[in-house]
Image (cartoon, rainbow, N blue to C red):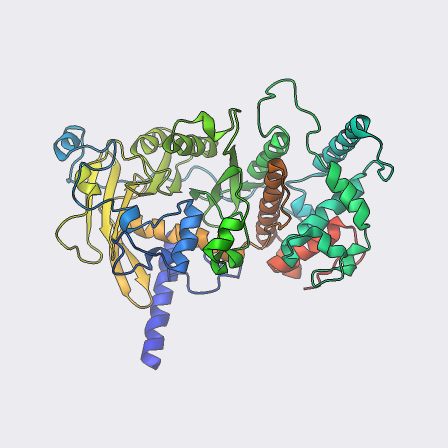
Length: 532
């Protein structure tokens, strides 16, 4: 027993050592939890190539983080076996060789990162939770909400009749309004009105700050943009776009991400605990979102650097109906998210829906390097050799890999109880890595595979386990859903900056305590000490 314990500890230390070599600080928040080397990405089963493959809970969480609802191994990556003509756009071996694909490998050296990493400004040791939040939602932004809300209320009453219970909202009330709705993320209650109830989710400590009727009046008239602009009036997100632009600029000005970043569609619908415990029937009953949100996220800290929102319906240029197919959408999303990082030698990790040869080739011309997972069903396989995308009839050994190159881009096929395929120009195909698992020990793999597993595992655990700020208030209007989601992201980023500042050693607030303190400061309560 003691020998097994020592072996497990040595594997854990080895895994963490490799994490550090890949620029991942898996306990940057002091909340890393379980052994991060137990990567859900590699929790495969022996029948992973079967069409009946069922993902394990850890794998389902990772697939959601990648925005891919099907298994990322077996049928999701391997395609339908070795028969057939291959995925659309793929080429035969002879055509691939004519196009420059070869099994002769050459070393690839990645240039040094051309930027610094960390918070862009130094916050004082006495900075409050509200100070960090207002790096993203400053007073002038809140004042604009006040103006637009009052304008909308006035216009509404001119058309539908006076509302005797209404008086213009103030900036202090608007902050309190934000605080009440934000409190639903701390106390995990779906209805913000529960605060004034006598039930389990009632909160008398903050309910006295504003009456329920006054809150409901502000909620009724709340607006970011009261009226449709004369120009660009077909934009479906016009009610929220100015706020999104302001938020995006503040993200860019407040933090410089590390060299390694990931593009993905984060878990945003519900609390991760609900997602992993509810039945499929309960999931279907939840109202589906009418928008898609993608992010570029720093893999060293979890800071969300940039967001991209698209409507799933609508005739505007921001609607998905304007795009011909999903690869076109995902390519557009990737370009939008990476438009500010060209020329810095950044490494981007991508899921199957974004990974493509044409996109990676275009990014390499901008000094953006990529490492992405390939799926024969989800990815654009145009220009890729069919021989690398089809499963071999000869059984492969665990850890066995094949590689073909075209210029500096490598196409990797790696076996670990299922075929995984990667496309990369960020890691040399001649360098080997290692997947370290508690039960299986060391599994050899190309360095690109190890890097992808480590970075994506960290992001998935970060999103699923540590995201405490999902606002549970569920409005019917799409623009309000987007607004409260982005407020959740802003609070998350505020906590990350707090943990990296001189203010953290003073009080050392946990995520829950930071959120509780922020709510009380927004409500301007005298006693701002956290109650958790």
